Image (cartoon, rainbow, N blue to C red; front, side):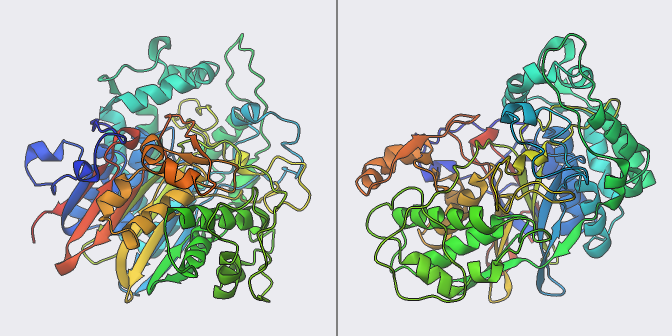
Length: 588
């Protein structure tokens, strides 16, 4: 998020968000722009430096997977409060040679000492800033597996752009400053974090150059020593020591709980290649991330519900999302620990049964989960009210990137350390923030909840990297950060593009609303201004987006494959400071 793009979601029309394609002049390369069109490969991230890192790998002959890992590593430098090697994520990948979509699960896991009651009675804010919340990191294992199976370059080579950024530094923008300031109180309670992110006791000022030489050294050594250096080696031992004894500042009054992770947990961790979720929607094949993410199942179920309806509008979008979230909360968790009825959740019969509940007015809150039992009858007389928990508070955490190469491979990649700033704990001398991913578990007591903690279990995620194929070839790739709003953001962008007649830049820029089986629908100000009267008349209640940043949902990135081999890369024009879209060449 380096060069700031100024836009007002409430005052600028869709056309005002559009930018012409990026041209290959020296000046244009240094200006962050949200839309680029061209050939030979493309990338979109929230950050200009990360987009340039990924693009440099494409120009060196690397493929989309090589560039995706390079971009993720660079985001670990410039977006360290959302991404990093001590975090995790999900990749949805289209292999052009095999004409196949696959996924790679690098989700963090609970230590073997964790139990279902580990978080009971602990206030959420205390759990966030603790060693107890730190999951076994998955990113490095994910990078290794992704590169070995689908990449063309070694890890040490794709880490070079990130190392250079960490050593030379990047210019602090308003968003980085604000995120640091929002975390300053807890950062100040850890000696290692304060020394890195609060130089002189204050957040780095806008316009200053921020360097992370410890991270540069860590990346360089990781490239030389390989993943085993983390998964059982010295770096892993340093992470475990930090988790078990966080470097709390003398005199700090914060109750910082110690963690349960052991080196044996790191040795046992594996990234996993999994089949994607797949649904057909109006003749298109929509691929997403399967459990332990709920992204693919919930986006997919909502699309199938919408396809079963006679018309699709904003009311139907909100109601389909409400129902899909009711089922997500009831049935989705780590499939190694719970029986997720994935095929039935995504079936035509179940979608039609759920679609029966959508009438001309908003249904009663909360919607009850359905019964994906394979036996589906005629429409019931009315929607039943359920007893389901409210969604926990979600922020803008996580980040998403998209990459394609000259061969047509496509990567949609969500990376995270969970909360903005993760656990708030930097590993001394390593320059990396530890995740607080285990707060994604249900805290309980909640008997039967599919997302309760367990030894080695991966917490349920909302990350929803998505690839859409038309006639077996890529049409769209899209994803977003934003906690559980990721699901509704991806769903709304798809509907904007496929049903509401918007271009992809318009679909990404359009004002958003998020209904997650809650009493009120969160809505950006521009959405409320435009649609509140219409939706309130139908029984919907709109409420403000709490943030931070207040009033914003997500910071999406996407690709669309146009005619004649041209690709359009799209990032946010304004949210979270605006994103960066680049292409290898604007011309053939």
